[in-house]
Length: 299
Image 1 (cartoon, rainbow, N blue to C red):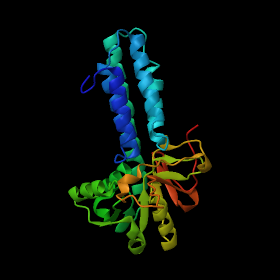
Image 2 (image 1 turned 30 degrees about the vertical axis):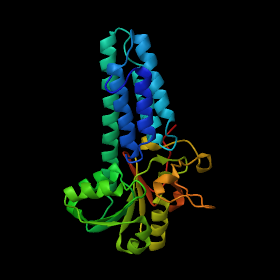
Image 3 (image 1 turned 180 degrees about the vertical axis):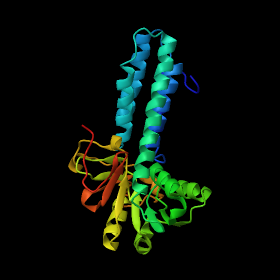
Image 4 (image 1 turned 120 degrees about the vertical axis):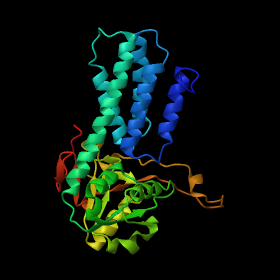
């Protein structure tokens, strides 16, 4: 196994990478985990199919549980688990390894297609010449900008501290020659009046349509409500979870990322995600369409 001493070393390395990845969006994070499962299926030490199944299932279940705020990770890995359980018992060990890799890629590609379809559905609702404001770096917002192209007048992007993933979106839109204004999220109140609509992705959509996303999303939704512009959530149905907001614990990362020196009587806080209530959402776009009445599809 590349860069790993043994099976356990590989699993711990990959779990650590997924656990500490706060730059990738929810779908990309899940796709990274699926790629890890494919790599592990190909290279892990397993003398027979039973041993291989145990190793893959162990890693899959650990990956499912390592990022509780990211429903996409748990959902797509569950899809992988369910599909591998349907494989023929007539396959050889090498054929089973290959089949696991193929299934991981199949689930990964299906996720991309769902995201693109959600963005295309939302694109059909956006007027030509609109100026869009967004927060963080959602792959679905990238797809949306691809579909709209010159129909968009401009995109306003927040920096999205502390990971600064807004820079990734800015670089992408620069490459496709999309006019962009790049701001700190503290400036949302200054720029919201320039926008015709606000759009974000989501890490997770809860039972009532509330969303978990990068901290600052709720501020954008509140600013949009105050400015009288729509706030759209573009997120695939596999991001749905059958949980209510009060059941959620938001992930908190080391305060050292904020760069504040040690000060007596001061406690720095670094919550990466916030919860935006459904009442602030104008409509939800997924691969099946755009609706103003949220229906949770996680059951």
